Image 1: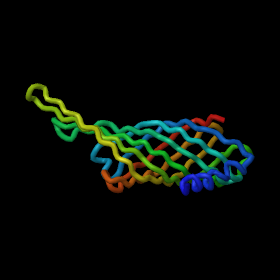
Image 2: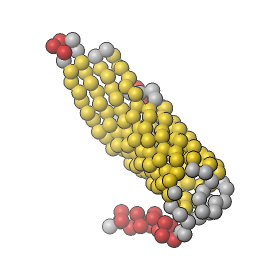
Image 3: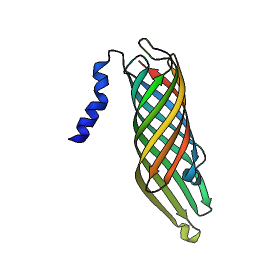
Image 4: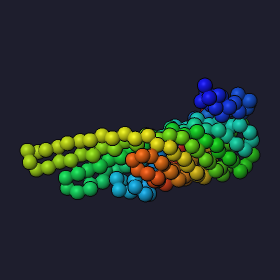
Length: 182
């Protein structure tokens, strides 16, 4: 019951605001830091974001993204793949006062959960041996970022931090180019 009350409190500004909510679909480019660098070098993916203005400068947002990192060969007998699925709730502050739809420079902060998906493939020369292991972990995540909204284009940069039982504290830098659907 406490969780439902907490969600209602977080979403209550949505009910009080008369400004229009909108979605954005984005392409993501990520560069890992920390433990994620052991698995991949560059990640690509996509995101969906719901944004609802709460005031003339502040919007609430809900973001779901999927990013997969390129395969990195650990040695000739082992390959690893990594992907992440963060789902976050956050706040976006626009420096310029907005009328109906937001525009200009903004700053963001988000909190949420992330799913981490690892695939490790072992192979060998004896009888074409191949063995694949799949591991899934759930962790907490947060981001801080900045960007610029220009018409229907949203260009952003953020740093994603993840805390999980598998990878410890790690993260990645993100670049996002999105199209707003109003």
